[in-house]
Amino acid sequence: MRVVIGWACALVVVAGMVSAAQGQCNQNCEERRTISVNGTGTVTIEADLAAVRVGYKIYGPDAKTAYSTAVDTSNAIMNALTESGIAKEAIESTSQVVQHTQQYELQQFPFNSPERAQKEFTDAQSWTIRVKPDQAGKALNAAITAGANESGWIEWLAENPGPMQLEASAKAVADARREAERIAQVSGVRLGRVVSVTQNQGPVAMDRIGSIAGIVSGNGQGFNQQLAINSRRIEYQSMVYVVFSIE
Figure 1 (spheres, rainbow, N blue to C red):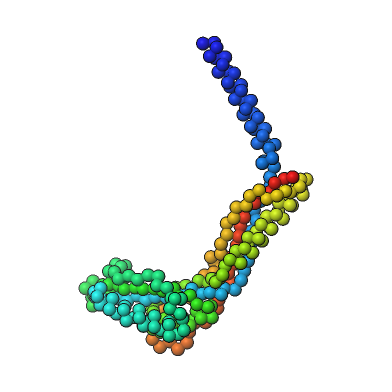
Figure 2: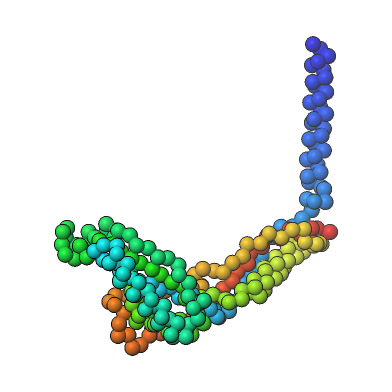
């Protein structure tokens, strides 16, 4: 029994020595001699692409009637868009549904009323149209004139975001290096090589989306003028976490 206890004590002592050695290494080993900093880089340009969202909502007493009316409206909108000079491949269908009208909409009308009976079913469809910024108003006007009665947002985009991403990343790393050099100088050490870089980047949403309209009432006929729409600037931001060695 005494031998077993003595051996156990010896193990505890050895384990304690290893633990102390590891703790000392954690403080003085080369991989611990680093400076870690954050950096931010921002690039701002004028949008050169607009994604215009338009659609319609049509009611009917039954699914067949609602769908039949929707077919005419859908084709009229598509024809108006292509006839205005928009390429068909620039028009993307994003949703299409035929369903019972939601109860919250029907509750606006008295039960068993003629108005409610004519709105038992809903057919809705929407598109995203990608055009140059100066064509956004024209696309919206063409769709609404042809029967679209819903519009939501224009999303302002960069057609080729690659150069923006690279520039923002370079600025973020440079910003991190300036901060690391400042810390090294006040700490009395010399900054070394980059050990690692972690990046988080993307466009700033609040700067790339602009509201143009809510629900457009009426049948969309008789519009002789279009909305005055100006493109917005896109701010692309890159944030990095950089670890530098200390020489």
